[in-house]
Image (cartoon, rainbow, N blue to C red; front, side, top):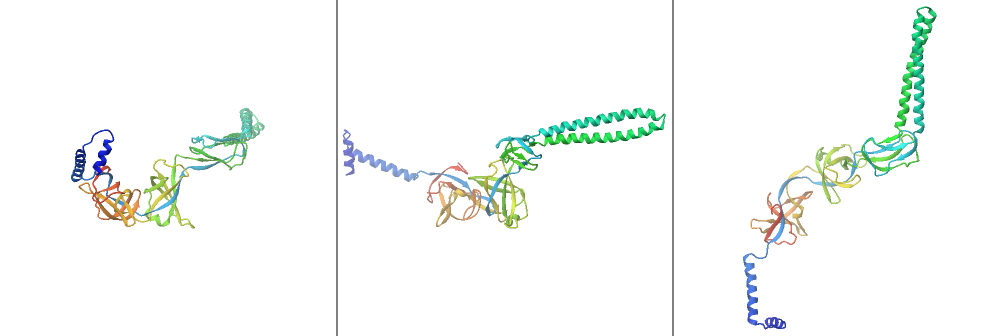
Amino acid sequence: MWVDTLAGSMSGLGKPVNKRLIVVAVLLSMLATANAFAKGGPRAAPVVVGEVSERMMAPTVMVAGSVVSRLDAAVAAEMMGRLVWVAEVGDRFEQGAKLAQIDDTQRKLEVEESRAGLAQVKARLTFFEKELTRLRSLAKQNNAARTMLEQTESDRDVARADLSAARVRVKLAQDRVARSVLRAPFSGTVAQRLLQPGEWAESGTEVMRLVNTDLVEVRAMVPLSSLKFVSKGAELRVQADGVVHSATVRSLVPVGDLQSRLMDLRLDLDGNPWPAGQGVKVAVPTAQAVKAVTVHRDAIVLRRSGAYLYRVNAESRVERVDVTLGVASGDYIQVVGELAVGELVVTVGNERMRPGQQVRVKGGASE
């Protein structure tokens, strides 16, 4: 019946059809398909594999932390006065650069006044020194001149002391002028303006916040119980926004807060992956690291009945291996099962795989 139907369809195209030829063509096609399955079965499934490896693993707890700048300061005014200029938020400055200016008109006048006083003292000292020269010659002739000589020597010594004091007053006046300018204590970016141009600043008033955005670190408060498992120089895993980074423990303050029982942990970031203020998670160990058999997380297939993975054998076929999961760290997880270090397991393409299925490795541990 199906042959008549097919012949009728082809006759509708205006071509005569031999039914015997149709039957022969269909039989040949079926025979070719059967031969293909007999020789190799279905085409091998492409997969990505990874090696079973042995690693030092430790159970961890994820602790909330933040990326902070190691140089973050509130720059305050050293002299009181009206602000005539303040740097804009977002502007970057090198160390020693001008950040703000306080009106220094009066202080500059004080510099001029102190310089005039210095000139007066210098003139008086010059007079006493010349007078001493004259009196020394007169003192050789009479006693009265000798008394005046001693008085003039005393006046000269006082003038010398006044000269030193006058020079100090000039330096103090110049220092007040210099301190009317707020300068960057380190290289950084203005993160906040606390006072605006035209406002009055008292001595010690915070004018702006300066942050070094290049020198950052991670700060986290961790449980005191982790103290014996974390040491200076250790590498910890830090993650945020799907990005995982390695950080080195720079310092650990072994003093717990009386209320939270947490201690301060600081980590140096390799590079600058996140800006200051970014919230992160830090994997803090809660026990000693032990040697464990591990696989990549993607190799694990989780079902209600348990966890398993597919191992690739020498015939490029997969074998299902039931495993018990252990400690996880980063992309790797501890597995307990009939696995040996160096064996290949499927990491991509394992969700719809069947035991005994032929596979073709296209990436991962081997190509």
